[in-house]
Length: 614
Ligand code: FES
Image 1 (tube, rainbow, N blue to C red):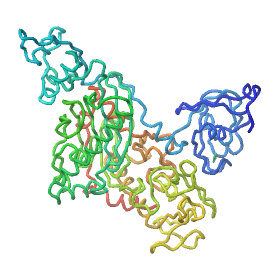
Image 2: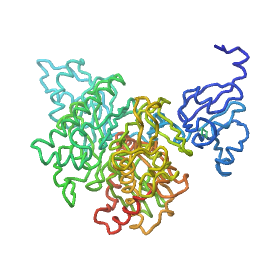
Image 3: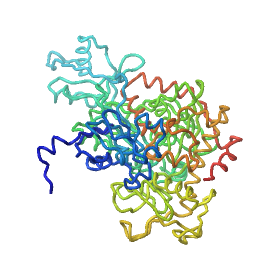
Image 4: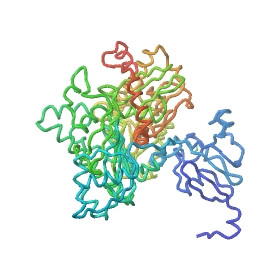
């Protein structure tokens, strides 16, 4: 092995990779792609670094690189080159450089790591601490514990808070165990405050923000004093056992006695386990969590809150409640501080919930000055169009295909999942997560594969496979395309894209595009009028925009008009956890939205049929 000499060390060049914050040195003459691979930065390089795929784009922020090669001049426009964009497999650093990696150039897991950054908003939570020490009782001082505490608070100028039964169950024991000193968590009410937790004076007040999707949920543990996220984690939504989409879960609840209760109990069980995991990671107690914010679509919201769902599943799909709610965690079965409340922001309609409100809040899309589309792709895709102060929203059933479900070789974004595909002649180039032999295909991979199959003329605009292609194989009536033979995969099975897979993608992308078109029609706009196109959600973070445009899921717009923002619903939930002002804004957003019901819209069927074409 070559050991670095002192001379080597002197000549090595420092490369600073942003926004993942990794710094490493490289030998002179190395390409940035080599440098990235050595530093563990997972850049997409479908062509293996020969300059053919154009996926390894990076931007020079500081320092100097070798001049653009002929390959780069072909792959990048003069404007892109002028803006500092380069191909990592072509450019070599000439000295210390700082490189910005656009999210679209990062592999899926690293892209998900950098999404959902901290919010820069003023911290103003609805729950704040008050430390108080009381005089112990004696035979000559027989005041009740609450009176004793209230008197001590009054001496500090704090008005008497309300004590609910859950806190009263805790209070006496805590006072005695903690030598008569406690940190009270006080939650603001319309008039005065309510005690929601009794902590040790050394314990910080924490909050929990949860984004519950139909398929996955993400939870964040925050310090309410600083707004800083202490731990975050994601798991599958356990309600999947009762149905893949909310419609089938509502049907389950309607057709089984105690069905709705079973769905709620399963959710709480999983959330409590997730909370315990976050608290373990952060080294804190669950009883320090004095407030929670939960966002989800309207059906999930109702299941979570224990509200009836029958009317949500029947036309005209009416929510039991759409206003913001604060519910006692202990009544819901969520194991937080004894009196902690769970805040549920307002819903918009039967199928557009508080998660969409949270996304509009976090991205600031709701107050865009120029026409803006903001959508959150999931099993249900919610779409909003903001134009001249108006907010139009709709929801479309895009199905779970992008989560890897209903796809023959579908899998979640894990090592060995194909995430990018390039077809050149009869050759198929695959990039998998972690560079492992392929074992399946994740959402971004299937989208890419369909776009490449269509571009290469291997499937028609209706999704039919040309069986004359050497990689076409008979399969279940409609045929399949061999992405990788068994000898090249990690599980010894052929990796196939079937005709049925292509159809699933057509249905999903058709629903999304039709939703966009209907909103544009409602506003009297065309796709070209869209100034900003915001794509939220985990899948939205790692999908390849060019592929999404090529298959017609998104309109043909310049790439710079798109913004991939990660789990913005989770960010919005976090903002509402640490800021009362953000809650008020969320309520305003909920009130301003005009919901457009696609199923009865005169333009929907035509838009959907057209959008099914590839
Ligand atoms: Fe740079 Fe393909 S890796 S263009």
